[in-house]
Image (cartoon, rainbow, N blue to C red; front, top):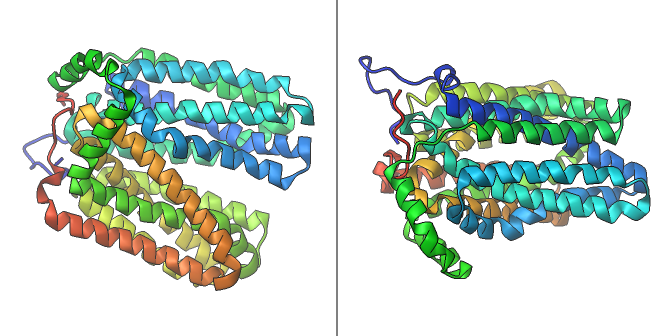
Length: 431
């Protein structure tokens, strides 16, 4: 996909004009509302579990349960996403989650804790099918050259909800209780489902061939279809490079997830208030990063932006984790959000534009599995080595992992200069 400027004589699609496109606007608005509801529940439910149990271990189990489905089922889910109608998959996932959440209201005591765990696990499992389908359908909603801008808007909505959702979740939990939280998240799924129902897909040739092959695929054992997807990924060296790149980044993020609170307490001599400030400025920085990624999408090839984003994030982290003054850390953490989002947006765009439509679901499913496993691996390493090596040395390794990810992308650039060209399966939407 060529994201460079096409010349002054041609009109370039901007993020604003993308939101005027009916199909993309329906998907984007639906996701804005849905992710806001997710943040509300994500913040409130652990508090509810802690109030029931008084156990930190039981509360932490919520996060593990939410992460497991992606690690266990992600690759398999991608196989089914490639077999199923993707729009129908998205709608079914939204309606299923909306029907599931009210069951949380049946739990009023410690004896019902297993029900909360089960609902959280099933909801996360359904989401494992939703996100590959969403990523795979996007190239059919916007023009190929607009994928970067579309993914930038997606990042903007995600980080906007990250700023609003946690506070809203806390207010609802404190004021109305679990009932208000469940009603808001349930309504968000219903709104998303309605928005996706309103999307009108024009079937291109690549999608026609994929639909025609579904009948044959249904008679093929799932494991053969899964193996075929793995074989495709192994043949594409540039795709393997993307897996390696993001594997390094997720390993780094797993370390940060475990040790960041310790960093705030032991290095910055702060507490929950300072931690909240840092989360807020990171969200603000990521919001700015989304706009920057959209602006740069007409000037930089995605792989160039990935390299710059990964290396810049690593250098910012190196400076931040070796600083001991809170004001400096606040500024640098905000800057890390600015640099990280262009990396993530470029990565998503490369996967969408470089993988043929027939395999997109399997690629995104496998990508989700790899990301979850590396995230858990990073958390495990941090837990095992935090006391042995110390906080700052481990965070220096986080910076090195990010810079290493940028180097992998740079090597990939030299080997595959044509990786940025649109491939079969993208939607030829007129501007």
